[in-house]
Length: 125
Image (cartoon, rainbow, N blue to C red; front, side, top):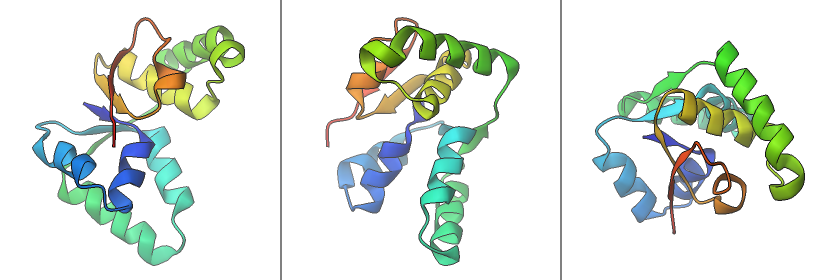
């Protein structure tokens, strides 16, 4: 399963349901886009280290950008930015899931649900 950035935010806020899903997942993936968002939003060096330690302790695999992911993300922007408001980061995350044949877990149904070739599981906190 590929975890969207919002799942980590729910965990940071103390949401046990989100934490349980991560804990019970056998394989844990995240897009390099999600990794960059998490590091960029850290308030200080300590929070950055805590985020990195969390990802390491749960054996998250960070999936890199590829030419195919970039191409698919640009198609998502063309198709869904005006109708559903998908932004670049979400397009890259969705394309990472689709290109790697992974289910994306996110609470952001508005941006992701319309993408036909995306396997999506909606998280309801």
